[in-house]
Length: 546
Ligand SMILES: [Zn+2]
Image 1 (cartoon, protein in one colour):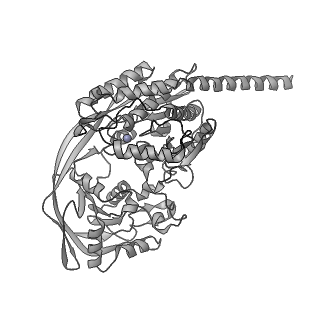
Image 2: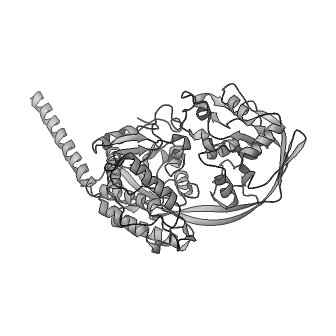
Image 3: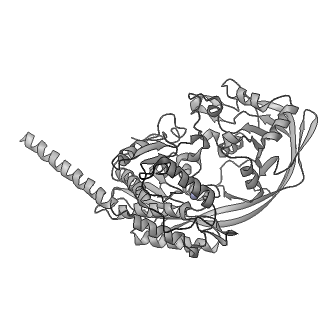
């Protein structure tokens, strides 16, 4: 009796799981290259006018996204609305006259933007700094998990902090120091700006260095002369430093040599744990004028409510914004953004449709999220994570993508930020069934994990995956795939030529979507809470719930 009961239970469990796996397979089969093509073609059409926030293209884009969400069976995610207002402030900063530094009795005039690239995220309209003391703070890092504190024993309140880019792991090649060559979040300029503000500094300057930044000085230079978009701060948040910026390598070398130091030596010293910062015999003077323009864009999201735990959710996302209509190239002035980020929105819709097609809806909710203003600094996704429609601890996982290349089926799936969370292992299982392997991001020193929309989710503790086939074509191999990527980056990236082309092959993105769907499905239909791996800089943000 007992045995037959056990057999009966086992057999019915097996039947249940077989039929569930069957349902998974059938739902995944609704993801097709043809539909991915059709979404991409529509989103990259000239009628969307390049999908720029605050432009007429915004209404066309967000209206279309909401309509499609409804069509595939989702409901509005923000109460009864598909839209979440994202208030932003555009700030243009004019540097009035030269920036001067008195260093050991010598006056150095720095010209903006060539020697120094300055931005001001401040709400103040006039910023006058006179003889503000400068403090060298090493890498500007406070990382308790590494027992590291570049601000220990120094006081930067009301002063100008001067820091190095990246983290000590890169420059020592020591794989036990931070994460070796792989950039940690502490290496990013955004982190350094935030940490200096938390320490009470009034100004922060990062010494530029091409390897550590991942790009040359022309990038911060260019961004300092165009206006910046900032998310409106919520009350109680730490105010940013009045002045944020970069010193180019030559200007920094001149300044430190006037003080009797070399930047190279300082960088070597600052890589040692026992080292700490010091007040420089230098003071900085400058005058800035800020102009503020307030504007509101929208995030778009739909929800498929869970049957048992509707408050818990997985998020699938891809930013909707691009660059609109601008400078013409080869007679084309519409920046259509087919690959950046039409293909990803198509990927998200196909995953959403697969969920909606399941005969039995998952226990947890699924949110399809299209953030605004990614290109201006992850603003839509940052606003969403600061004002989420469900409690932050109930966002179980986030799946993001960006710039998915439609170049056919791939042998690999490249995981940017590989090693951060258990999502990597779940993905490895899913792609193994497709005969594919996981490829950790081959250029982890550029900190790409901190540069797309899943990152604000990581910052509130949500394990987040950014994975796409990119590097190893099933048909043509690695060299060919690298050549396609180079071609995209040089000819189309952020240019009007990022159009939809009939020659695009969506079979690879279809496999990527099926793999992400499978992992998201496993989470949405279970109690699984994927964890951060030990050593991740995000592991301690939220308490572990088992
Ligand atoms: Zn993008």
